[in-house]
Image (cartoon, rainbow, N blue to C red):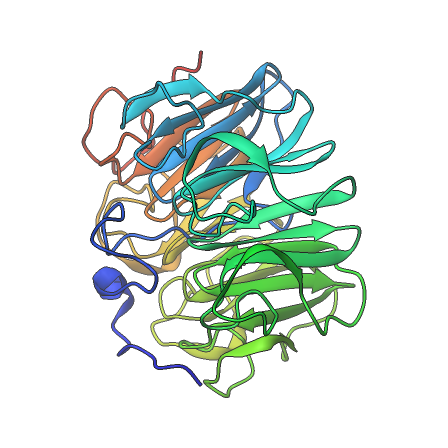
Length: 391
């Protein structure tokens, strides 16, 4: 069992951070590698914008003409070496022309391409290129070729779904790579102990999860019960989540919490707030206050959002307005995002900001210190900001 920090209320969650340093983008800020079960991008667009992805302090959109990113670029996470930090949308340079999906992590981003995967941004082993060098343009992840089905990044590690198997790389202090490969691996290593082929993956904080035939397996950090085994012990071996009905359709992992979409409803466990309750829980518990028919879920640092009937409902931490209800008051109960009651095609949560794909436009709200909302104002926004002006 690894040393664990003192648990705080979810409103104060950002008082500590594993793997961050004073040279990072805010030592107390982290990305959750949010996902709807198919990677950290939310795919639903039928127009110019195909999908969106949100990370710690940057946001990206997959368009039919390529990939554009905006926000912080001090680690190269916009994939454009000429773009200044806090940039408006810029085109990612050097990507394979056949990009199938995008994903944004803490200080890095990745693209699923026809020939495997490409990543860019902060190095330190998280790019999978056998180095610890930061990259401002995409490069291929070593050892991954055809067969990549999804990719999901966290703050300092990334996992990929490859022909039903799961491969992870980056930091491994708490077992988040699903391997006893040591404290880190600069190239992908296979997750050991999954009882079959995976259909989806989700990475957040220092915990990773996979969906296999309607069942959820997680490994890595367990400080708040996010492994769902009531032990408090970290694990580098996948652990089955008990207490969930069969037929889980999608998973989402926050920094210290996990959620599952089941038959139009949502159950969560782990850190208070993002799990839909006022206390930590190692047992999956249905989130109350959601209308039936949830279509997708996404988890941020310590907040969670659901797409329901074309509108968005969010719950958890709201320090920077990431719940989008014109407030900074935390809420364990889902609240409606203002002005997004219908027409939403997809939603994705970054660390402390959230974005939605609405009628072929991208609208974001929450933390905006580095321009990750894509708005003209550098201030946080408590409600969805005007549509991002993509190139």
